[in-house]
Image (cartoon, rainbow, N blue to C red; front, side, top):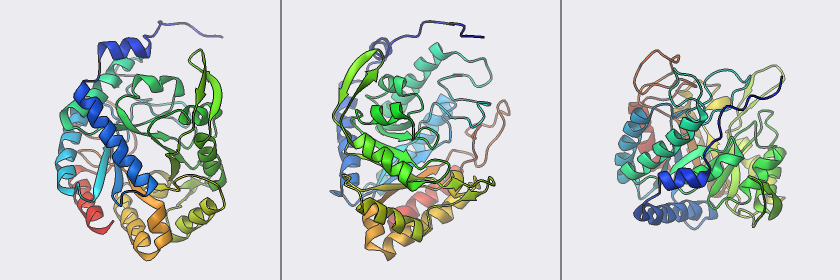
Amino acid sequence: MGFQYVSNLPSPEEIKDRFPLPAALKALKIERDQAISDVLTGNSDKFLVIIGPCSADNEDSVCDYVNRLVKVQEKTKDRLILVPRIYTNKPRTTGEGYKGMLHQPDPEKKPDMHEGLIAIRRMHMKVFEETGLSTADEMLYPENLTYLDDIMSYIAIGARSVENQQHRLTSSGCEVAVGMKNPTSGDISVMLNSVVAAQQAHDFTYRGWEVKSSGNPLAHTILRGAVNKHGQCIPNYHFEDLFLLHEMYSRRNLQNPACIVDANHSNSNKKFREQIRISKEVLHSRKHSPEILSLVKGLMIESYIEPGCQKVGDGCYGKSITDPCLGWEESERLIYEIAENC
């Protein structure tokens, strides 16, 4: 019973001192943050595509993937803003399985959180340095935000975290866009409540300090599908779902109504190739309805070099060890189609 204290972890300041963000990248991040903000506030008609592996498990293959992605960004820059998913902590429904690079910098070795903190900062930094694309990650642990906050331009709050008070309050102090997923139950009002909380100012405790936040006007919603009481996946990306969200937004006093549609997870029933069809349907709904056009600002897509997924230790380069992902060729074609139809 009780805890075994394994090691005293380095502070965010110690990690940042060891791996500082160069001045040129600080300036570039400001530009990227503003470009994403302009989409969410309606000051830009560009479309966000938050895309990448389900879990960023290997620095070499992740950097390889994003270096491919940056070439597509250059060709689609007039229409799209691509944000690479560098997801380094993974929520697990039962607590079992690979929990991400933060826990296991090497998925085939034992957990090592000290090395994990170093590994995730180094990987986010390397991606940004090599490609100029600032990153997205999930804020699974609010107390870890400041290890990466100077690199990330987009933060997601997962379906299992969206009702948590600390996630909501920490989101209110973030300086970049934060997307709140609907809970696994699918309750839209819970997701909107989270946006309300994140957009307000708060006083709370954070990393041993009493802190004040000013509220985050870029907090918005992410539709990721739901699971009913029978364990069946219920999608919420259809026209009717998007229009309902628009109506629910209109009844609340929220800044910058905006939604990202997650094309995988319970929307696809984890049938990863369905992400292609789902993305096209969402784009069609935007064309059909001015209300949906103004609300839906982007898509979230799980994609890697090789399609599908594998078990830890199978050794296929660039293939997911968590949820199945689209392969690179399918992903590249899909991004160009999104650029043509958004």
